[in-house]
Structures are given as C-alpha cells and as structure tokens.
Image (tube, rainbow, N blue to C red; front, top):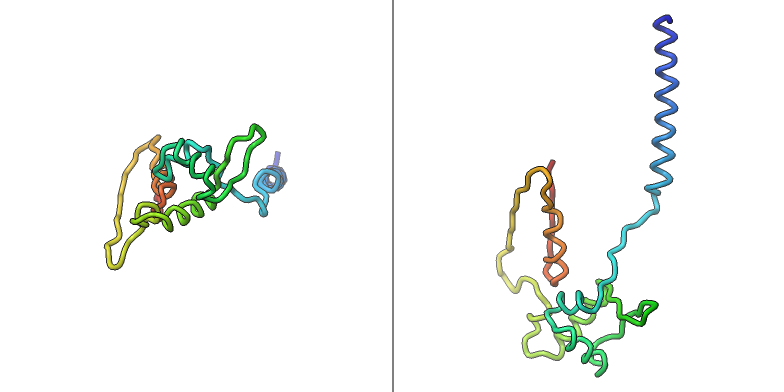
Length: 143
C-alpha cells in the first residue's frame, strides 16, 4: 500500500466517523431538546416547604393554597412553579413571610459555600436541595 492510498482510506474513515457522530448527536441530543425538572410528590413538596405532609393536605382541603396537577392515580404532583406559588400564598397568611420567602434581606451579605471533590465525588448534587428549599443558588464547576 502506498502512502497516498493509506491517507485516502484514513480520510474516508474519518469522514464516515464524522457523519456517524453527527447523526448520533442529532438523533440523541436534538437542538430543540429541553431538560425539565421533574414533578415532586406531596411528601417531597412538604419537605421543601418546611411543612408536615398532613398540613399540606389540610391546606389543599381548605383551599388556602393553589391546586396542583394529579397523576393517573389521583396523587398530587408539584412543579417548581407550584412550589413558588404555594410559598407566596403561605407568605401572605403568616406573620413572618421570611419563613416561606427565603433570600437576602437589605444589605445582608452573600453566603458562599465552597466544596471540593475528588474522583467520583458528586458536588453537583449540592445545589439541588438548596434551591429546592427556596434559596437562590448558583453552582459552578471546574475540571
């Protein structure tokens, strides 16, 4: 085999591989694909809101908080938007709105949390419970 022929075969293989990778990316990671935050169960929602699950059910029964979607079994499913609306409704009826509307007040300094992980660590899971509890959270990562 001559060098030119080897080079030509390599170019052909590279083009085939490039097309295969492009097709795979378009099929599995479509440009219009979106990620969505899953819905939460009533137990998870109650935990995020700082309530007992029974109290959350009572608030629904008394129409003190907005209704949410039901799954096929009739169980309540809470989206992040639902949790935000419920927080607002609870803040309007309490003496201390900061119990449900968390965040900095006035000139309160920013809280910075730093963590380091090594191979196999999961620091990206840290922001999820912080933000789900109502606090604003920003996470950055370095490799």
